[in-house]
Each structure stands twice: as C-alpha cells, then as structure tokens.
Image (cartoon, rainbow, N blue to C red; front, side, top):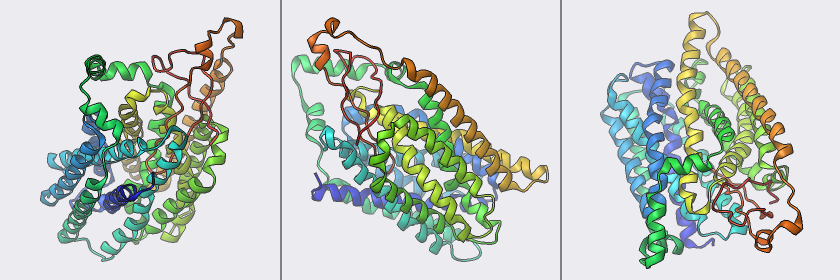
Length: 460
C-alpha cells in the first residue's frame, strides 16, 4: 500500500496543509483591514454557512464522480480562493465573506476527497493504520507552516504587501500540490463504480444515487454524537482563529511555539498510545478528550509570553489526538459503506460547524468582557472551559444511561444461522490527521447495511 503514489498523495496534502497553517494569520489580515475580534468571529463563523450546506453535495459528489477528480478540482478552488483575498480592501465588504466560504469549502473538500481515496486502498483490517499514516500529513503541514508564518510576520508593522504575500504563497503551495495529486491513481473500486454499465447493477446504482441526501442523513446520523462534535469543533478551532490577537496583547508576534508542540504531541500520541487507548472504547475516549480540552483552556489563563504557550499546546495536542478520530470514526461508522463519502464529509462538517457556532460567540464574549472592564481573553478562556465541562458532563450522562440497554440477548436457538455469522460494519476511522480502526463484532442483524449499526469499542 505504501508505494510511490501513496507518498505523492502524502506530499500533496502536506503542501496544502502548510498553506492552511500559513493562513492562521487570517486574524492579522482582518485587523489590518480595520476589524477587531468581534468582526473576525463573524467573518469566520458566517464563512462556514455556505460551506456546511454545500458539503453534503460534496460527499455525494465524491461517491458519484470519484474522489480523485473532486480532489483536483477542490485544490484548484483553494488556490483561487487564496488569490481572491488580494483584491479585498474592507472587512465590511461582502466579498470577504464570499471568499472565506469558498476557501473553507474547497479546503475541506481537499481533505475529504483525498482521505476517501487513500482509505479505499486499505483492506478493512488495516484501515486505521493507513489512514493514521496519511493523516499525519496534516500535522507535518502544521509543523512546517507555523514557523513559516512567524518568519513572514516577523516585522513589527503589517503592510498590504505582507498580506498579499501570505495569500499568494498559500496559493503557490496549492499549485505545487496539484502535480503530486495527479500522479495518484484512482482506486479500482472507484473506477468500477463510475464506469460500470451492467443492467441490474446499474439500476441499483442509479437508485442509490438519487436517494435524497437528507433521507440518508436522517436514517443514520447519530444525534448526541453530532452535538458533542459541534462543541468539540468549536473548542479545537478557537486557537487557530484567535491566538494571533491574544499574543499581540503581550506585544509579541510569535505563535509557532504553540502549533509546533500541538502537532508534535498529537503525532506522538497517535503513534504510541492510540492503539492502547482504543481498547477503552470510543465513547470513553470522547469523554476523556473533552476533559483534556477543558483543561487546555484553563492553562491559557497564566500565559504571559509565547513560551507560556507550550503547556496549553501540549494539552491541546493530546485532546486533538484522541477527539478527532473518535468523533469522526464513531459517527461515520453509523453509516453503511456505500455512503462512506457522505459519512466522512458529514462528520468533518460537524466539527467545522463548531467554528460556525463558536467563532461569533467568542468574538461577542471578548467584546462583552471589554465593556464590563474584565480582562478580555482570560474571561473568554474561562467561559469556554466552563461550557466544555458542562457539555462533557451531559454527554457522559447520556452515555451511562444508554449503555445498560445497548445490547439485547438473543437466544441461540431462535437465531438463524445466517444471522449468527453475518459480519458487522466496523467503525470507520477518519480524522483530520490521525485515525482509529475497528474490529469485527458479531451482529444480530442479517442485513447490516440495511439499518444503522451500533458502533463497538475498538481493539486495535
């Protein structure tokens, strides 16, 4: 599986991730245009609306037209969205919202399509391994991109030329990734799904394609998991959006210490500890990960210089390393394999929906704290930590109440032979960078793809 084309895909996504990390300085761009954190929150939050709606069509498009084709088109779209920002001169302009929508949608589609294509190469038993290795490209991009952003913004006074260089360098990195993505061949299953023209199978395929998207989502979507995913997504995206302005309060301009420690910690945890943690079950991993995320926000309170960001970065890396794969893997495992592209896109959209909800709220919190005479960022960090703790407690309570009646005994004599031997669908392991895997478990249902499957704890 780890052939030349795999590492071309790995390098391609690393370049796009470097570009995305470089744009963590988007807060400086909004500040240069005259906006503050309140406006930044609304630009980033509203920028998610169109992309979240369009993502459902993206997931179906991946299943219908092929992951590689969607991957190439979305990379071009990401490059174009970066270039559009060069002509934006006012934070109140509707064009900044439109450009943000296109950028977020295209970047998310790059990840969804590349992940779908590379996971299709792996047999079921090695899904977590392959996706985990490919997902580390995202962290590699963070490690390389954060120092690049600090170097680019090392000057004391931001200028228009500096802002344009940031977006043009990001677009150039996306352009460099295109030839590498082009080398990656389409999977055999994907080619067969697109090119096959058999009579009965074609009819079934057409019927599956025209099934309404929201019917599929209503049938398989796990509600409580989506709720906790939105909360977790809000928490995980706050540093990427607001950290540059927080550091600016100390008259500093260095944020790479946080992001480098963040990414290195997540890589080490997924490589060394994740296989053991899987045995606890993904529900427990989510509960523990939310606790780590709460602690990370509290650790921001004593920070007074860039070196103080090391400890919050460490804990954020731990939280991200376990939360992202657990939420996305558990959620996509509730969908049948024929809807894998839609399921992957949905769960990634759920985490990004947290940015749509959280960014405007954080901006409003900062403005409210200032009007009340409170220290802005400490008040915000404490409020977010309390919200994370409450959400974690509610999810843990739901999990405890649901667990006792999660399994139903079926007498062996009353169970048909084909039902006893029918395989289940293991939880799909998907993450932004890093993955979980699953193992088969006996299922009482003879038709596991005709109805939602209760995800099971993973054993590595």
